[in-house]
Image (cartoon, rainbow, N blue to C red):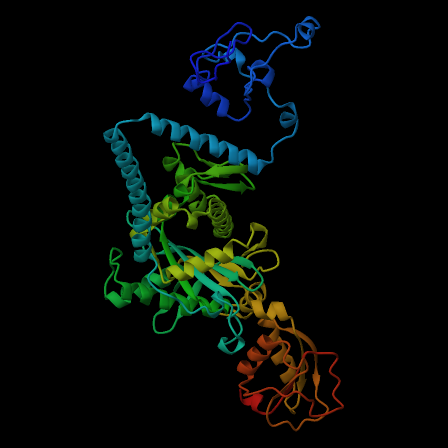
Length: 565
């Protein structure tokens, strides 16, 4: 019989099974999709009929020897049992790198959504889904934007100004006016506010001093009962100074008045008085009432304070659920109300002990704000600004606050000094009675703050002076006895590293001469000395080669003009 082509009605039989012309096995869609998935392989070639162009004859001898096993009938579809579900053992044994694993996970997620999207045949349903996604995105953007805008507007209401701290950003030497410009000093005033007796009295007076150069800070507490004398206004307790300046401007007592000029008048009088006491400049101010303090602590989720000894105060029991125990000893978590009670209590302890507690609370609050990354969180900013509202007044600008925050991130709690004026090494104050009032006065005598100023300037040493730590030699080039010693004492009180103090070889210097032995390598100290001694420039060579410099960085030879100064 003549052999027919394969395209005709029948093809050559293979093991008795006829194949239709041009027909290939049909594979269901769900099986073909599974075959395309990673990790699943098609059946081995031996499980499928051979696709040759010519008919194959099976040798009966080979068949008898089982060299060519009889092929099973090929069905019209592939059953699942024909799919190789095995896993590549080598791939399992070889762990994926984290990047590849994440990439494959993302790929599976994308694939899942693509399949689901293809299953949605109706364009109207697809359009509804698209509109829904866009709507959710707009709502999320509005919420985030609203929080940001709310925080920004409230912040603009609180942070209205800009102070005078040159070193808030690193300054060139020629911008520095004098010793102390290497720090940023912020006066913190706490008032009771509405609902309290004498709401404008500053019951908390503290200076937060930041050293941006060396990444350090200090909190200096000043007793509210310190007796001070104010020119043209008489003597009073320090806590009444801000109120006096504000009410004098208004011409009346009005604690509810928020006139910016009146508040600035209060700050100005407080500045001049406090600067006279401690001997350092005030660059910025923050005025906070009790309500803002309480809400600010709550806004950051409370603070953790290590209480050295249990604090009892029966006078505050009515605010503490009837209990006189304000805080137990040990590490305590305070909400805003507890923190405020801990800061205000003084009837069972001294004003000095209360100042120590207030410093501890400020440090705890600063650390909590930094830990939370508050100023990078729009929601936290909005909460803080809501807490502040009209309850906080400051002349810090938004830019200043941002810079202070950036500096503060590098200042750990171990780099924040707690400074008081009644500590064992600084017992400069005592209590007394004046005009029937219990007051605090310097041990050296009323209005004598020399020891306090020297102590504070060295504790809050200028950042540039500390960094350069230049050694200074002071020589008396006049016939006035003790001039070198007095000048050296003044320089030491500002934090200078004073070494040799003696007479110059000759006594005929009309004007003070300063020799820079570093050849300009310590420019900040050089600038301060020029300003202090009113010089246009410093010399670079000694006028007298017999002078022994003792390896000093700067040699000061005092002239007759200093006896007048």
